[in-house]
Every structure is written in C-alpha cells, then in structure tokens.
Amino acid sequence: VQLQASGGGLVQPGGSLRLSCAASGLTFRTFTVGWFRQAPGTEREFVAAIRYNSVPKYSDSVKGRFTISRDTAKNTVFLQMNSLRPEDTAVYYCTADSRIILSSLSDSSQWDYWGQGTLVTVSS
Image (cartoon, rainbow, N blue to C red; front, side, top):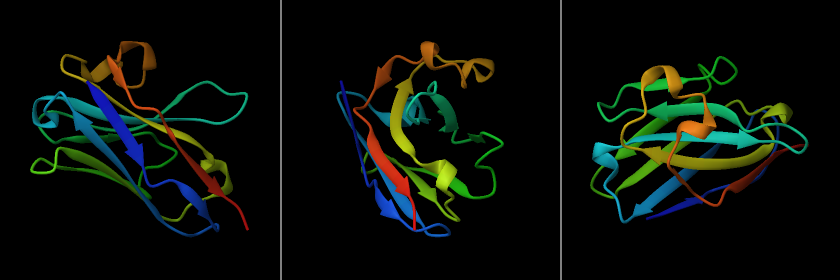
C-alpha cells in the first residue's frame, strides 16, 4: 500500500493550493481518507477527512476554507485549501483507514496508512 501526497508549495496569505493524495494497493472508495498536518515543534494535527460514505469532516481551524473531495475513478483524494494563512504552514500528510470510527478521526494513532507528506508554506 502506498499513499502519495503532492501539491504543496509556497503561497502568499489569502492564496489557494490543492493537495492530492493518490493511492496504490487499496481502493479509496471503501476507505476513510484523511489529512493531517504538522508544523515544526508541534504534534500532528487533524485537518479533514472524507469517510467511506463521502461525508466530510473538518477541524474547526479549517472549516469554511478547506474542502476535501474524492475522485473514485482516479483513486485520488483532494484537499482544496483557500484563504490560506501563515498558521496553515506545515507538512501535510494523507492517511487512510478502512475501519476508523467517527470519534477517532482526529487521533493520528488510529489511522493505518500514511503518505510521505508535502510541505505547504504560507508566507509573503
């Protein structure tokens, strides 16, 4: 199983980026897929998840600015990030799990599969 995250980069405050997470060895359609982020010196933080039934969940810090979506034909999950702020700067990781429950989405230890991360830097 491999998860490949991409799409990070440098963007100015207020700008947008779209992250992608492509999977091989598993079918996203039957998995819950999530995004976490980790800034230097901090713990990994839940950002968003899209459940196997396509219901999205977001952290309060990104609600209304980020949108998670899934393209089942491409076996890829996207994280559209708008109105980016300097505090969004972090390495973003995608993750997947076939059995994670709703109450555990924000607990990074409960997820099975992880990608390598992509760096997002929000700075002027």
